[in-house]
Length: 155
Image (cartoon, rainbow, N blue to C red; front, side, top):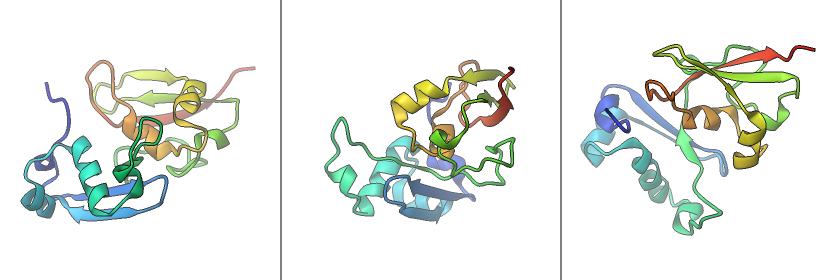
């Protein structure tokens, strides 16, 4: 079972990173990155790239203040949002209380209701949906990157 994506999975594709804190962006082809870094695993690679971009948080990283650079998700990619009212840049704290969040795995189609209050407690209300989607993994097939579905709570 594969634990993490590696650069060999992205040969011929664009790799984009985005920092929620400082707004820095990085974009390069997977082939060029493979030639530079080898077959590095993707979770580790984001901190290496952040250091190359001279990110202050990575240099002085503590338990409470960690790097928030994540892989950017394309609006047109498989990791999309079902409701056009919300975008990947919507903050979790800006979603109304009556809206329920559900994650749907694109591989096995398992659906799981998300506890948005727990997400806000752990990540903060100023966390974008983009960052939340990148952290979710299916508990059944271990595929990363679900589709977010929105529904209104029943009265």
